[in-house]
Image (cartoon, rainbow, N blue to C red):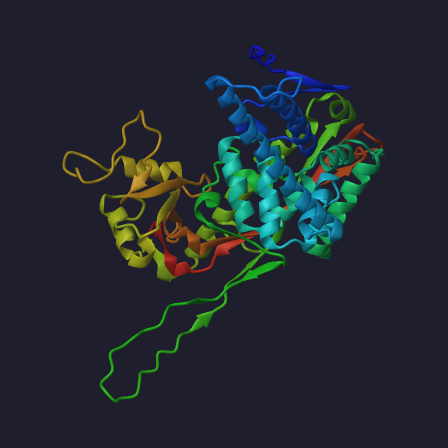
Length: 494
């Protein structure tokens, strides 16, 4: 009887010209493998398992407990790999017979030419692909920035589709060239990416915003502004909608007045009066001149320009959402409420904020709007309220000097706008000191993201000779205004 042969040492790899394949040690090792790698793994496992099961002469081995456990695990891993290959082959055969829209979308996005497929995508397809792009390409964003973009992807299919068109290497490279070079040379992939943007824009935005190139979403200040350290309270508390026209139109009503009616009697007439508030979209514009040398030498120039645009755009929005005239620009909440006597609440003593004034304006706000209310005021008005508490007025608000702000009144958050009047300079009867109300009734209507154009040469205004400068011209379509004045109360001087 032949002595039992000890199995050969487990082969660590098998050579196939240019690559070696390790023996998997667990089912987890199969994750992330390509079909070709799985086939190599099955080949390696076959050789390894055969060496454990039989000698070179074909005799069956008597395995130890350890060897038997290794053999059983190898068989389990092999079966799993074969199942994964079978599943892949079935899907591949389906694609060969009739390519699916999902496959064509995936392939088109991979080659940087998604526009046609993106336009035809369903809302769920656009959202899922955009979220995947955010996960893979948005790693440079801060956590709050990623959260903001994800929220907008889920809310707006237009933002999702814009991400798919602009957030790829080819479009970003082409956009930087278009924004820094007067005669950029684009390769084939970059040209295709720019054509994709043009086709997408034509299909989704129409001719009203033709011209210019969309800033890639992950640096677009008009999209991720609230997550860039912005001090704009409106972007946190107001209602924001995306529109595809030059105005948002809604329907409002004071509600249905129900009643109890006697048995057998005619029901009362509870007809409601409907109103249609409108928020017009205007064009906000910014211009940044820069020298040719700066454009050539500054690292990450395009991203830095987007940061500069953010600062100016943010400041403009805070100003206009607070006190805009509504003519050629958003209607400010202060402007609207100051003109409506029904929502103004006067100080008890003109020019002086007393302990009873915050109570008074709060009580005048209808109960249904107090549930989600916020306050808006200047730092001067906030300071006046902070100083109200004394030994005799212990119920009033006080915040000591180490604190920068009284951040809550009646349990509701307090926000600052530097464009709200100071209480010491409020001399007219309708001059507002503080707004309180449900700011979901202030609507911000936004059309798409921000677009940019390169002005290739700037000229001296006196001699008309070139200055060696170029310029970034940027624009965004946005509007805002109250859609229900009764949701607010304005504390005024007298």
